[in-house]
Image (cartoon, rainbow over all chains, first blue to last red; front, top):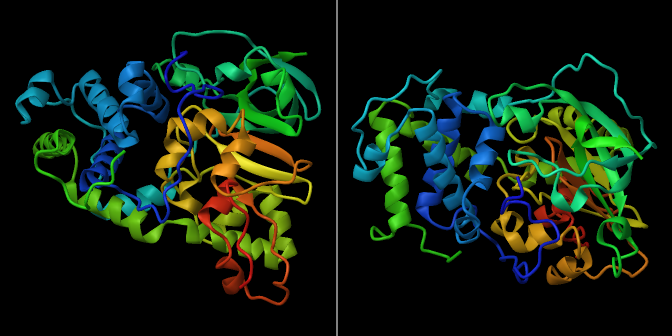
Length: 219
Length: 201
């Protein structure tokens, strides 16, 4: 979706302002926000793509007005409600009132190291051979889906070069919506900065994205 | 965001909101609060940019490891026991005299947790995510890094599940240094691409 998350090339946000010796957390509640989010994800009711889509579906004013962990928590509340784990009444009262759906699993403290060490690999076998090969010229599709996609707006309808054929990966555009993993080949596609940004672009700049095969067509 | 003290103000509505959510989920038996403690401890004390610095130092020190890192970063990094969440599919990109690499995630906050730990706030915030792809030189200036005009800049937008680690150029004057000494020169920012490796004192 053309949501607030799709930030590449937008203007007006000001300087980057890196913080010297930045701590990992800026308030105690951020620690809990990280942990609650990971524990809730470990229940297995949704995947990382649905989770990302919940964050980018915040109203743009809300998204830009929130810190990152605030975005996480707001999206998490949406996911928990959608999957029947909490209700509006629970959240309104700040208490467990309504019964919850059954999770696939509950992450216990003793299992955390193993679960974090394992991660969640999302490479998958793809039955077909890659359509493109390294060095080939391609054009990204121009589309504006209302659902989740990982093709940023700045890189749509642009001509670039396949730099590498990566692996088969779960397709986020369907996986975010409960429509299956439908793995596809992923390619690193590199673009000249001038092709993307046009007049005034930095001539020394190249930008790459990692693109699923259905985002691409031969140039 | 504001830099609060390292404890919650009980009046902070967002702290109260997170606490309520944790309480609800705990009472329903959906989460284990002790698991949260272990997760936080892991990312506060065990997994951080020292991991990545050891990867870079080894690549500087051992050409065979550097080759492996270039061909199969996931396996090379796993050989140092750095694995797991948000490091499942790694790619190392090597700075050269001609080209400087910079990593961003314009769409969210994709970052190689297994080697760099949790991302800093600026990496996740709109100014960096919006400008890294269109004005990387301007961004780098804000980090105090001025690249020569002829240096090419390659920006890697982490739009899929590959996670990128920049291997900065090894500083001059470090011949004969041990991996441990070399690792001291490798900052988190150097592995994102917003800094060079440190210079020997």
